[in-house]
Length: 363
Image 1 (tube, rainbow, N blue to C red):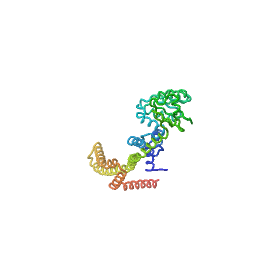
Image 2: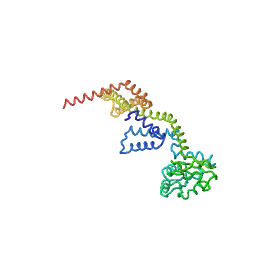
Image 3: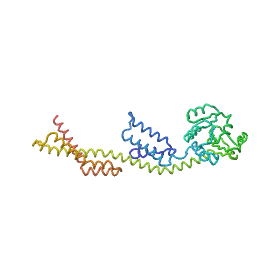
Image 4: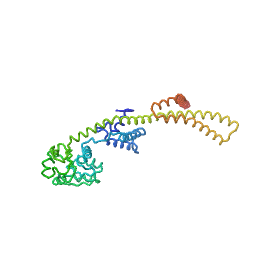
């Protein structure tokens, strides 16, 4: 069980994605945000400190992702497939990725993830080839902003023939596309074609690379992209930790400012105690001579209060504005010593105890 500064630092690292299996992934930040939202609800139990901590953690997670590259680069096979095809579209196809006609063979989980990543890059249209219509229809419902053309496996070669980039993601144990099949269907050596196989076992035969104008990539190529991006994210962790340390220190400073509230209260109480004592001495003398009216006495009261408030403004502002934890602790210590606040607290305690004992004897 972590507590204190260790708990704060752990939450900052979690929100920043540093403790995630996939460094920098964003899902954990969304979960921390939900915790913060629940903590400030009417029936939430976050409290002032925990709610502030969760809010700071969300802000720190956003800052890390915007000021470092810790969330940049694909670190999953499906996202790496999109990144690779986007990066190589121009050299392999002599065509910008945004203009390429896309198709995917299969309609399982990997296809759903693939379309998710493609949609985030502005995908508008894609063809899905599958053995049945059920799953492609479900995907069409999940992605209403994407124009999904659904075809059965009987029309596979027609779809491949009019596509520029074909992703394969089926559970087949046999090749769905290989050199012989491309030749039999009149697709070998024609216009450029990119095949991106994200299946295990493979759906695209290695011999496709022997065909002119066909660029074929498989999971091994995608793993290389993932490894490169993961290494880049690992390097970004150092910079991310520096930023998270800053946010953790700011939260610690805010927590320390809460410890200054009792000191501020004691300072105000002590100053007001002396003000009232001196005002009583003054009003007794003035009352004896009927020197001042009630309205004039009220003006003297306001004057004394105003003088005290102006004198206390400087010390209390200094205490509130000190940012570092060490500075805040030093300021509290200085004020306690300068105005002997600990003594006043002890005196007040003895006075209360004395009044309690006297009341007990009277009973």
